[in-house]
Length: 304
Image 1 (tube, one colour):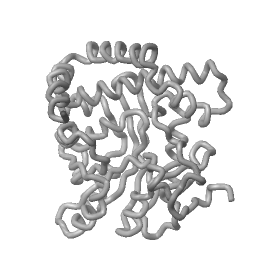
Image 2 (cartoon, one colour):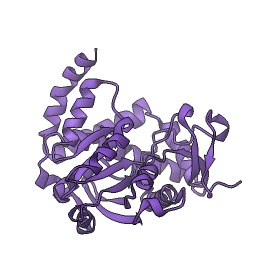
Image 3 (tube, one colour):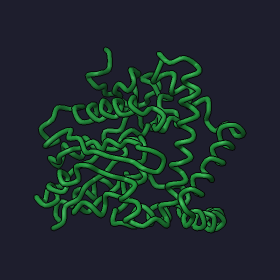
């Protein structure tokens, strides 16, 4: 069934990926109408998350953000499909970075680094940076259940030079990379929500105690790697800008929680600037302290 689903969907994906952007975004508008007004895709989840993050906003403002967020989600989905056929030159014209040289200096110094990214603006098009940085880029990700779509995503995201690494293999890849001639940039989507069974570490995010992963921090601490946050903004439809912000020169010298908390503080600041461009459709706060089945470790930012 996995193969059937993939081979039915692939011709549509291929066709959309070759269409001009105006038509592609027209398709996104149609999908948005169906998702929001007909299917009502995760509308209550989005509204619930927005009310937690922005308790000062009234119902009309929350609904307006919900609509914009759903529309942006559709754009992200269609842009991911468009990535299949987009050229490197076109992508780099649409996804800009104003301090690539700062990061490239680490590659020239043979120093591996960790880059933490959130589900803000366009995390999919960060692959535009592959051709601008001398690093070998390793994107840590969670594999899809459908092995055919998983391989498809791996092929798309690696078309400009990235290597996708499953989360469970990330530490082994870092260790392997230490002995190679060419060092790597390890990129992680660091605001994913752990399942209840694996929730162990909790920090504050929008004033609410929140379970988090600490893989990026542990990786940087163990191998003494510099850490950056990639701040991404949406300029207009189909165009994004980004900036690398330093969190640490050497993760092994930082106190526990400094890297993770710094990431969430910076991400929250960026979300507040453009709240409509964050991925609100997942149940970010579904697991609380009372739901944890492991020994809990709290950030100093969590009220005791």
